[in-house]
Image (cartoon, rainbow, N blue to C red; front, side):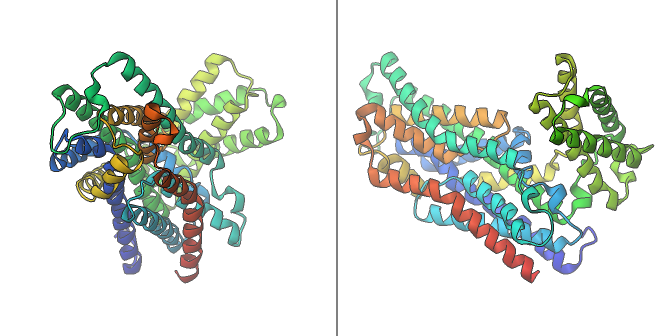
Length: 467
């Protein structure tokens, strides 16, 4: 298989299966939040709800693009971390996967709404930090800290925004809808009015679709991390892209960079500028007269990926620095060429997307009961009403949809559970929250990153020692 020996082939298959299992757990762990409202309010039978949610999760992954997936891949600078020893790549992805699965499965078992996003990000950061303890000069460059800051901000803000927005939506509901039925607790076994059911069906569907679009892409990103780490030559660049088209994009980036006045650049920016031009020249040398990556030797394909990443990342940093002496039109043109150039390395094979879609969809259809009970009955002192469920899901769907559009991983769990908490507060203030449950969710939220960082770093260093 791809020229790997038997041991490496087995380990590669194991890693892919573990990534599928992580996404399967993600399905029944996180999607339980999406179906909690329709099941708890008797708006949909459990079997119908989880199948409905599972299909929409599947659709979300298939139609959601790969922006979030690439955000996951870009947290670890693979061009720096991947070396000639494929067992080092195996050690990296095994540690990442096992630490994510252990924490995710454990929190689900105890019925605690926990974020798969937090879990995955913590595990990835743990791998990067572990490089500080290995010989060599990778150290500080083992984590893309700029991307980590953006991701961390999205994860930090999501529960705060969910909590606040749910309070506002509940206020709007009370002003616009005077029917007291939607503010009362569901009567066991009794269906709510049809218009309430339709609203809850819609919000459940939206959360499920956007969950697939965001969380499903994390699984796609995981598989790509595995493939790039273990088979960098085969999966480092998209074989469907015309190399001469990318060369044309790089030529335009190079021309604009040469045109810019370098005397006004800071020392770090001057180094970025020089590195960018160096990698642009290297890319053009390797691809001269070649139209497909199939014409490039296996050993040179990964170097093409390095060139593209150095060129695009360097240009992005120089634009954000604000010292690039180009007109607004030229900056706009530069951004367009950067985006086009990235297509060579920001991709996922169709089989990867389908595989993750199936795993997430199937996972959605099992294991939902533990989380549903927590969301419906244990966050507030009163059981969740129809309006509260709808408010939380409207907030979650909008928040997750916007995050997916921006290419940022965000926590479905925290958006929804904080939305439920906000809707409870909107009714009777903070006294309407069950402090024990809220503390448990908050503590899990705080502990997820440090625990997964330590766990993945420890497993990585252990696997590096024995593989």
